[in-house]
Amino acid sequence: MRLGVFFIPLALGLALLAGGCGRPAGGDDGGRGYRIVATVGMVTDIVRNVAGERARVHGLMGEGVDPHLYRPTRDDVAALMRADVVFYCGLMLEGKMGEAMQSLSRQEKPVHAVAEAIDPQYLLRPPGGGHYDPHLWMDPTAWARAVDVVAAVLAEFDADNADYYRANAEHYKSQLRDLDDYARRAIATIPETGRVLITAHDAFGYFGRAYGVEVLGIQGLSTESEAGLQDIRRLLDLIVERKISAVFVESSVSAKNITALVEGARARGHALAIGGELYSDAMGPAGTYEGTYIGMIDHNVTTIVRALGGQAPAGGMQGRLGHGR
Ligand SMILES: [Zn+2]
Image (cartoon, rainbow, N blue to C red; front, side):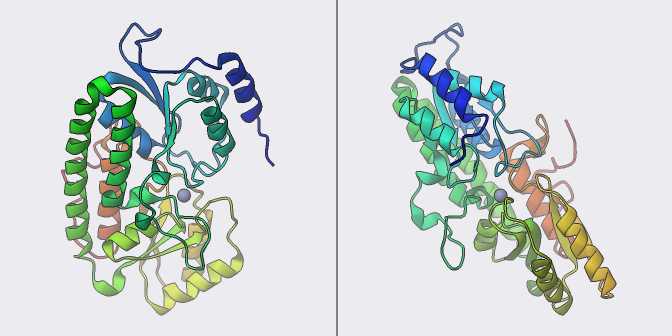
């Protein structure tokens, strides 16, 4: 059992604050709404869009943060304890926060794992069984179900504004449908034999399922497992045999295994390029288009399509990629 630096102060703090949560009442922030805390950016983005101006939304994990390994800071603990509602992805994505979330929920704080609340028929299990794959956001149509989960929770928590939350959710989901249309059309331009996506860890299973792309990660579903030399050798055989031209790094995972692949391929006389950096488990910089969920997926699709021989505009779906802040 792991009792990390997080768990103990959280338990203490919770004991002090026990009984301090409930319906939105304006509280101590001047009546401008209630407080929501979310973990990864992809969940935070849904909550921001659905809650709109009714709540103050705080995301714990920013650009480049790996949720599999993330341990909350003292400030995070304080924010979680003050929150009126907490959302996280779940399915063990936030591997070091499970106990903390259980502890919060034992204190009767509304704590919701959005990916655990959707119908399991939309979830993937790795071949051979085991835990569900948590990287659901890689398929915008599946992720839209998490939008429904957030809308339902907020409509119940703040029933007076239920219609507002439902309307916001519908608007956001229509944007996700446009994103899915773009991805489908762009990926269809990649020559069929080239639809192979090789990345640092297995974050793209849902992407592969949605768009008919074969997906191979060097590490498993969590970055906690180390890749062995044998995994790298096996992938190298496949890359050379199938003449794969590009592999991809991830913004929240070390590039060392991908670099090893590129060097290994070169040693065998096969030209392998790094096709770009993808956002797997964290969105791009705050305040940029890539720092939103839609911008993140647009960036990934556009980068993958262009590197694997398909056609997509450099600016992506809406010409907004690469403009910075
Ligand atoms: Zn991951």
